[in-house]
Length: 424
Image (tube, one colour):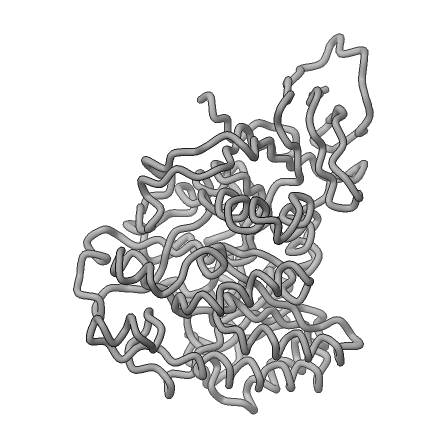
């Protein structure tokens, strides 16, 4: 038996954080009560630490197969554990793309060796080319966690509608990268004053807005469960807020990244390609709209869009450098600094957004401290500062490298086993 003593237990289904103990047996939560008899048990003294469900990231890139110089499933899993994540869902824009059972099985076999839960999506269309649907029933049967062409929008409206109808039949989820290239002159930077100062055309906010509007309407029409990924524009948040009022089937869901609720286009001016992401960082008004959406429940979950790239790639000219920022190890700190400390949301709300909600949306047995649930737990200090001098990810493409932020993960536990410890 493993007992976590004196923790401030943040059960996302409770109304308050309560100091008590957690007992774990056979990889599952046995009880959350004060325990006096600890004889014959392994004990972790968590005094001063918050105990929460292990975080769940439904939008991450481990780059395998195809790009092991950026990240591998192993290094990605190490980064996730260091950030307090016990379950991650990987995107399918690998090389080859995960659009067939053999590639899916390859990822699953590699993931089975890791100490955290690594799940894999399938593409929606073959090769992410937006012209032909994958065999969705076969991929779902093989264990796909959902379907997404992340990195590319599906421009064919009728094909998207067909995908939604099929997904609704199969009771699965479709996740959408919403950027219409017709509105993009230069990806990775908002079309506005910063782009102009850098001599770049930028990505107009309408690229996201028109796609979000289209897919919300089709989701309401078909009853398909959707996840609109990495929101960046205030108008998109408002469109989703209004659509949810009509959503009798609870099929509309969306996510925000720590990047988009923490940073603005001004970051690009200072950090260049390290702040280049798709969709781009936008204005302070957009950042505040995303924060409001997280606070009022319009945005269901926080997802990192952990996107590793090599230093050589990011050292290129802005137009030639790839888009993406790593995020698994910094997400908790950014949530505390930009959401909890300013009073926008409570610590319990942050934990729900990072664990309970994403698990519920994706139908995963995770994100809870309920009796009998898997003992996937993170222990962290909300106050202790963390200096990000290095990352456990294989890549270091983040404007936060060298920063000191609040929030330090002390321990990550999966199925009752310690998979990360700050002391090691």
